[in-house]
Length: 386
Ligand SMILES: [Zn+2]
Picture (cartoon, rainbow, N blue to C red):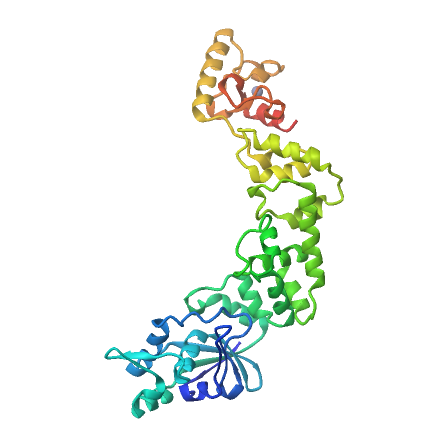
């Protein structure tokens, strides 16, 4: 990436042709039309609070440096503000009399300042880095610096890197809080539409996790129908298979589950009663796993994190088993006793054994002392895999 430090650009230069959009709260253009202050991907102007905007002007009047500002060179003599749009918009708004600073409790607009102070502001030089480079370089750089103190999240970064018609349309659909669908989607998608979490989710699903690649490929697309169609297909599949909405459904990997299971038939009524049974089972620690467990045919218990025996139960069961076994002169692993090798009368240490459900959890066995037995690790593993 090529960076050029410019120290000769003044407030007057940047504010030449400054346009501020009151309606959207955005600083739009400057530098005689050559600078886009708030590109589509930037967050809105948030300094208009009579404190941060005033502080920017006070700094200039005091002769303090405003810190580095970064421009991205997008074409010959065309720039976008990468970092610094809050400061530049504050300056532009002040110079165009949009807000006042206070001196001796009197509000002072730019027009009412003494001529020497006006001149001081206009002549102030800004410290600007012009950056020019490949997408990958700018991405890397973007990820390294903290933009305006609030780091952009991963999707905000991608929107910046791949800005163009596709991102604009994607944001209009998936990060528009006025879109009534957001409410419905939030049953399955977690996060904030404004922070691009819904757009990120839709892109993640359609691209099978290759979001950057997908955005790069579609950057200049002028319609996002494939993205919308895929997202809606997944949502509609989930809401058809699972007719009840549970809060644990939010944020699951529905794209992956759709790809894996959408060709299998399910009876929504049966599924619904399975969900209710599992939700009512106090031994299940991970209700988020219930949905994938059912989709996979109710086999993979690991997804449910069925409650395991605690150490006190294990220890007391071990002691009881071992005392009895020693009296009989046989192994304290009941399955070793049944074998025909040297382990038949081996007394295992507690560390070499694991707790096992006598009656399996899946057959209704409780995680209670009465249903606990200790097995040597080999036998416990063998039983667990059956
Ligand atoms: Zn054994």
